[in-house]
Image (cartoon, rainbow, N blue to C red; front, side, top):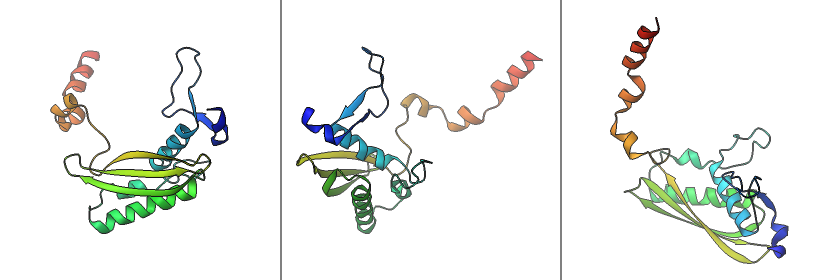
Length: 161
């Protein structure tokens, strides 16, 4: 770890508190680079006020078709975004794999950490038809009943009046 200080140290993502010290956990070295790549992909451009150019446009592909052309465009955009925004990596290779059973494109990103000349990779599941995984028990109840049924609130209002 001592030799990789030039790669930087930053807060662990997602933020976590070290139970032993009570301080925010940090990462450094290749792990810091991997988390930076993940943050670039998960941050929508213009999401951060201070750095509106930080992030990627990957969310624009959320409802894309899975044709060869669109997959090629997605790979090119990811490669260009990472080369522009993460100066610690080079020699980026992006492969995509469409998984119909998951409704997702699995993105395999291989890169070279230039300062240490070590290879690393990130497997990034990109869901095309939903925002993430739902809890199975929550899915059992219809959306209309969970969010649009006013019967409970009407009874409470009658009890309070």
